[in-house]
Amino acid sequence: MGCACGDRPTSLDVGGSAVSVTAGFWLMVLGIVVAPLVGGLLTGLERKVIARFQGRQGPPLVQAFYDLIKLWQKQPRAVNRIQVVYAYAHLFFMIVSLLALLLGQDLLMILFIFSFASVALILGGLSVDSPYSRIGSQREIVQLLVYEPILILMVIAFYKVTGSFMARAAWGLGQPLIYQIPLVLVAFLSVFIIKLRKSPFDLATQLHEPHQELVKGIITEYSGPHLALIELASWYEMVFLLGLVALFWSTSWIGALILAAVFFSLLTLIDNVTPRATYAWMVKFVWKVGLGLAVVNVTCLYLG
Amino acid sequence: MSLVALSRKKSPWLLHFETGGCNGCAIEVWACLTPVYDVERFGMVNTGNPKHADVLIVTGCVNARSGRVLRNLYSQMPEPKVVIAVGVCACTGGIFHDSYNLAPGADRAIPVDIYIPNCAARPEAIIDSVLHAVDLLEEKGRSYDARRS
Ligand code: SF4
Image (cartoon, rainbow over all chains, first blue to last red; front, side):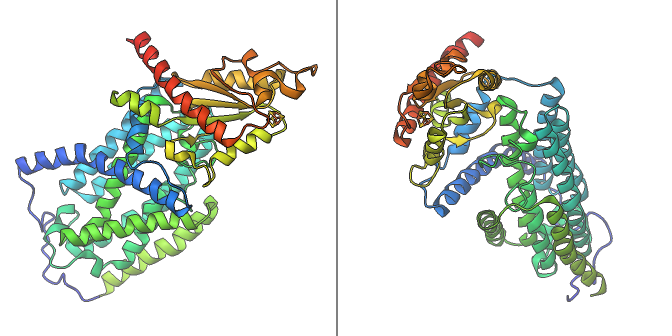
């Protein structure tokens, strides 16, 4: 670990400059309008790839959009009103965390907002009486507990390399972050899988798979338009997480895209070749391997 | 066709309920999900959750106990929804029709839209019925929209 940060400035606001008002406006439009289109297409692509893995033809690429529009037009039937509030809160905080990342804001704050989006979903799941929804929510809480330390370590490593918590500091780097914190990126893969609810960590719910041991877990009691909100939020979430991955190769567009594509392919591959884990195994594995790798990397940064 | 109508047709999510026949039809319903028949190419997903489902597939003969569950599931599905009775058991009671504890057909418990009177129903017939169901779904969706507005 050669230290490229010898002459690291101490001010918090370093690296890439703050975006101008017009650029910020267009970035926000991009985040709000284009991100769900990308997320929806990626969801469709993933289902297609899974089908091909299994020797099937699979749904059309735009299937996710059909599903969303259909759900939006269904009869709204909420179990209670607070459940609906939490569904909107989930979507809102997911969009805000994506926008904050696009605008290069403080990573700690972004993680905080992102966690709040997860908490909103959990509270929504806990606000109803269904045991399936409640068990799903409890599993989601365990997942939150498992990946949150890795995300925090990622931000610490980011700070150590760039000297700033601002995401835009990554844009001004001379060499990509991946050269200095590769192990953190590997650890982030587990967070990526947990957050996108893919096997082996699809404990709390899965949107499109016929697993039924918990019915649909945390989203069991959501239906129609409220389910559409959660589905839409999951598209923003996918783009947000791919954005975090891209941060590791922020110096070139091509590098960022390649890294995001590699992560997406790995996600689909791992989803298809692994069975579902129990939550106890998940805690053990992710904390031992994922957290272990991240700690080793951060320690090396401090020693190197 | 409007985007909404198209989406309604392209994304029928299924809920399958076996009320208690010989399970022959239930196996055939599952066969539809295998790579050979691959219903997901029509956008069908087996949800296993009445709150997410558009199409309810009933197999087997309805008795007092399963009829109660069937009514419960049906009432939890949001509008618009379509019910398909798969197999002669679900249509009329079939070979069990004169049994003391059975209702002669699922339509004694809930309104049924499409019947497949086979024993056992072939996957081709099931897929065909769901493709009829999506047209019905679109029609019901339109009348539901009219009622709502
Ligand atoms: S219709 Fe025939 S195959 Fe189907 S459940 Fe009844 S007896 Fe079994």
